[in-house]
Length: 152
Image (cartoon, rainbow, N blue to C red; front, side):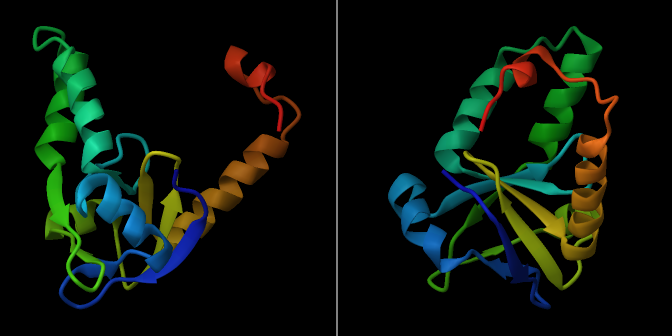
């Protein structure tokens, strides 16, 4: 399980180092093989261990090519997906199109989301986090049925 928000850097070659605490887990779980794709709703990237991505692919394979919305989701997620391999220094290389989609600059945030990471430009992450907190604090927020019973 991946959790927490971690400040990391993108080098001039488009590489980023995965925090040390996750490297052994990723090596054990997927031999350092990851898949990165774009997020459909936010200007960030989604970084999956290969085993988790294979579950996403299985779900995507169940979508119809005859239903335009389903076909569009498949096209975007699969067409943008890029395999990444952790190198001996715990780094992965991101393609230019992926970096451009998320507006990634030198300072990044790697945000754990249980089975995957979100990868954000640091300034964009901070803005989004503040917006999300403000929205949650509004009294007139519409809550889904699942969130109504959620306790922590």
